[in-house]
Amino acid sequence: MVTDAAFEIPEIEISTKVQEFLSRPKKCLINGNWVEAASGKSFSIYNPANGSIIDMAAEGDKEDIDAAVKAARKVFDDPKHPWNTMTPSERGKLIWKIGDLILENLDELAELESLDNGKPVGVAKVADVPLSADLFHYMAGWATKIEGNTIPISVPYAAGAKFHAFTMREPVGVVGQIIPWNFPLLMAAWKLGPVLATGNCVVLKPAEQTPLTALRLGEIIQEAGVPDGVVNIVTGMGETAGAALAAHDDVDKVAFTGSTEVGKMIVQAAAGNLKKVTLELGGKSPNIIFKDTENLEQTIASAASAIFFNHGQCCCAGSRLYVEKDIFDEVVDGVSAAADQIKIGPGLAGDTDMGPLVSSEQLNRVTGFMNAGQEAGATCVTGGRRLGENGYFVTPTVYKDTNDDMSIVREEIFGPVVVADPFDDIEQIIDRGNDTTYGLAAGIWTRDISKAHRTAARLRAGTVWINCYNIFDSALPFGGYKQSGWGREMGHEVLDLYTETKAVCLGL
Ligand code: NAI
Ligand code: MG
Image (tube, rainbow, N blue to C red; front, side):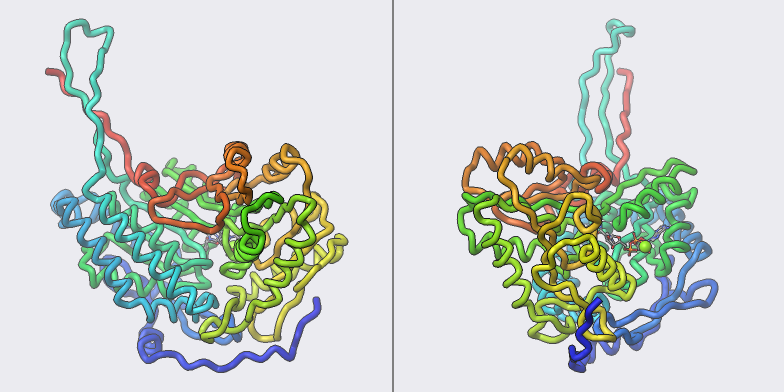
């Protein structure tokens, strides 16, 4: 792997507010109290821009998960607890308040996210933090709209009898949620919003790489007035704390976002008590550009951002770029030129377009794929390098001359690496688009409306973007076909996954 040792990283000052937050000990939130891990252990949190330690957090484990689950269970099982006697309207107002408080603390949260995850602070300010607030605001409105149906029933074996039958949507119970590091605050919001809207209690385990904004969110949730024990947060490792939560017999549902590999482990761990499981996993999304795309320049810019946004650390990244033959060279040159223009630097520097990858593990993973691409004989049009020696920076990278057996074409890289390939047959490209174990997202670029719809209908993916990419909204369900997951996040569809249906039948 070629590295550019001359790559210099400027020192950046941290605001007083963030310094204050960093100076407070990072503990677990259990039953409304911030507590050390039972073992007394803690783990280091790294600045991905230079590899230095920025903070320590309590290393929760099975015992702490146990305590958190007990706290959540105690609230859930007590019909007199304020959480359970609260009206849906009051619950909605609390959730709305969380959204408001996130916006009030936007700058601090964005800076913290940038420091912890490496993403540009400007992006966190316009995307991660406002989207997180919006998710709570959106979910606040649902708290008063969790409804069942009245159902006219016929009951053939009870001739002449009359019944009043209806369904109720009740909370699932104690929910375990395990989230990743690519959008730390937003993933916490996607998970906690629907949990609260539907009246559940929860134990959240943030990713060990990026626990800071989830802990700050814990403070905000307390400030909003959510009763103690409803939201518990245990920081710690996946293999210990995460695994204990997924396997816990007193957890009614586990919701996970992360790798497909761990998703499968979660399913197995959940088998003990058959807890409900929802999963949002990996992707290898095809982005298909037809030569009749409306505006080629814009399409190229979007194709670049489809893969390079968030340093490619997006489960729905447009990582397989398929371009109709006649415009292939122009698009590949354009995406590569866009890659070369990206200003790489620490997330906290105001002029940074792309920060470091999140961790040394991800750096090794992504550079490992780059090496594999090189060895397999793919042509590296641009990039393919690590930058500097301390931070976890890599260059945005474009490969062509690939074949469908190469690991860079088949596997989720989760870095700023795109493989581009030409096509000339629509049937063939739909089949190739679908030739993956994943099914999270896909992009289509054409001004031919019937071709767009025909292609969208045939692509086996949870989200299809036509003439746009990476458009997210709290109201739009998101999730995967095939090995990209089970269930959906956001929209009203997620609410079904946090409620049980109770059918009540009354003989009249
Ligand atoms: P991961 O799946 O190991 O981690 C995600 C979360 O799961 C973290 O909170 C982690 O602590 C937890 N976890 C890990 N092992 C666990 C276990 N045995 N039981 C319960 N929880 C566990 O992902 P990792 O290792 O950080 O990244 C590896 C790859 O996963 C990435 O390169 C990427 O391909 C994929 N990934 C996909 C994400 C998505 O949004 N779909 C997010 C993060 C990673
Ligand atoms: Mg892992």
